[in-house]
Length: 498
Image 1 (cartoon, rainbow, N blue to C red):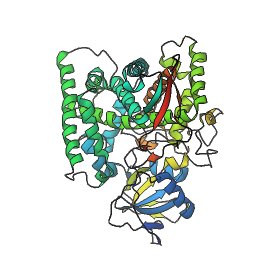
Image 2: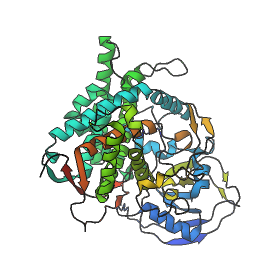
Image 3: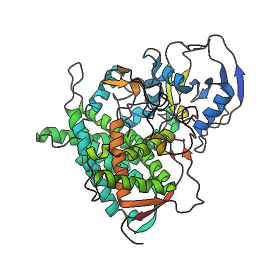
Image 4: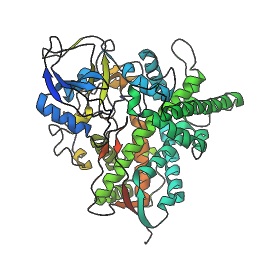
């Protein structure tokens, strides 16, 4: 869904600790956590809930030790503005995320290059997501979902259950690879790419924030997979350049092959390969997680599934013609289901920056020193009763009413080097981040998720296998939050008697 050159955040690594207060001149008040020697990452630790508890006790601004460094948290819309729209000279994302992402994505892209170059790379990707490209993706994504439903052993019975995370991960990787990555990449995903993707994915282990070089088995596999995947993309690029064939599709490889940096240098083929890996990895994680949450939520509300189906019948026609991008844009409830799911289950709930210059906090006596990181959490404001009544209730119809001043994004726009974007930080709803690292894949996300949702609703009704099954908790133990454990949903094919 969301490319890595976005508002990449971090899971909050929760460890046994003791709270104590300290006060120091020219620094924030500190909620100091003294961690013991055990490195523990708890998937059942609710990071957002922990932030909320600390907020109740200490207010919007407090500090604790995270990843071995004092980290000052600033919650609320003011905190989002302070950190996400922080000046480039004051806050830095590369120092925080490069150790984790560079071994996975490759050199000289995303967080392994100067910020100005990253902004150019975002511009290249953003302008590859043209209206023409997005229109073509609806057909490609629909075909992938339909083929999967037809051929997957998990969905062959008229009625049954399926492993949500597993099935949805396959659907999202196939749809993303066919649309953004191109036919050659999609053709390889049934074999070699699947294994390489899995090994690269293990590189996002939280320990790699601090020890990316550690000679651990998962890191050795990560490095080998990164090399093989880079070589695969280079082979595709070389074949396209050698053949001299004209562009016959709207995939991102063609787009990047024609792009040139401001200094007149075409993007080197190796950087194209690394940018494509970055698109694949981060986009797949966020899309897969969000789509899985959508299906899990729909299973608890079968009436919403039927509303979605009826919306397609009423808007598109009783014969349900092939979905087009124009038709997709008219499916308001489909968009609201995605929007509400992102509110409660944003793949990235917290965002960290390194402090490069002392940062005074307006309206307080606090000055955050350069020895700290800062952390904002759009996930906290998205679940705040101040802005969203019954915030933990999944209710797509909360978006039926016209957006209020507190829930819509501000109109002020700014160009960080990749085109005008809204600053957006006054809004409590920021699933795609804000500021210079705002995700540029929002339109693609809604096209991909909306098309997958529309296709699945045409094929199936969803419900819970049993009324007493608790709704899944969130796994915060990796870079991207996702459903915890294995969850099954009951499906029933439309028009087929069990």
